[in-house]
Length: 301
Image 1 (spheres, helix red, strand yellow):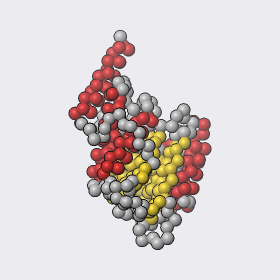
Image 2 (tube, one colour; image 1 turned 180 degrees about the vertical axis):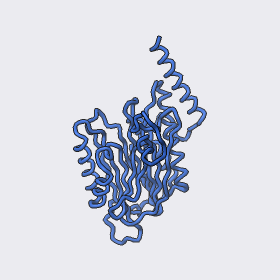
Image 3 (cartoon, rainbow, N blue to C red; image 1 turned 60 degrees about the vertical axis):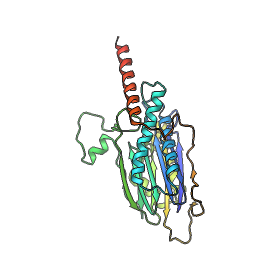
Image 4 (spheres, rainbow, N blue to C red; image 1 turned 180 degrees about the horizontal axis):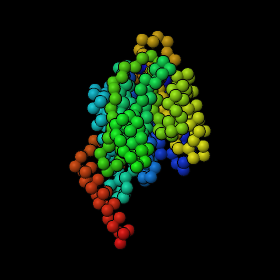
């Protein structure tokens, strides 16, 4: 497996950076992850970090050296990350839960499959054109696709994320067969909110990812001005196995079974990802909702 990859995260005009990104790979599989902790809720950066840590830990357990059922794995691990965030909030006695978006992509066997929840995006660019991209879980994006019709609301608002007391909505796409030179880009809304899809495709098509990614980030920060959002991007260029001369930054051919590499900080999770019990999660959610009701009642009195 051969690919080039580059990642950048900048704080922009915000007080702190709540975005997180990274990737892991074995000899025959790779996973690329990006999460955008949501402002307006506490500890968004914690939610984003927990999501990446949970999924990467489960990936490293499963990918020996491949993930057997990629669609099932992405669905299960997204929910595991959601549960982990809920548990964190419950154990900390928080009245509101940390929340984050998520986009994750697994590449193996010349195919890519991805999952997303929220408005962090994935783009696939082929031969200078946009092959596909994720559709945001926002009222504005869903209405533009003819999915829903709602009036008198802020249609930019997200209707799902990880960490919310309601079960997250997510989409799994793929497998999509990759061709030589295909580029896959994952980004937070700090990028696509300041640049058009055309700008993103143009940069990604005309430059190596190691140059395209920092140029895209700088353009987004410049367009966003002094109040720019956090801008985070991770992109990879795929090389097919039959290419003899590689300019790829990473070749996994020499990696042994059971060995993996990762750019995601392991950290120490507050609870074990092997001990995910739905009943306990439901109790945690109920406790959080009850605490919110008590707090509201106290304020009224």
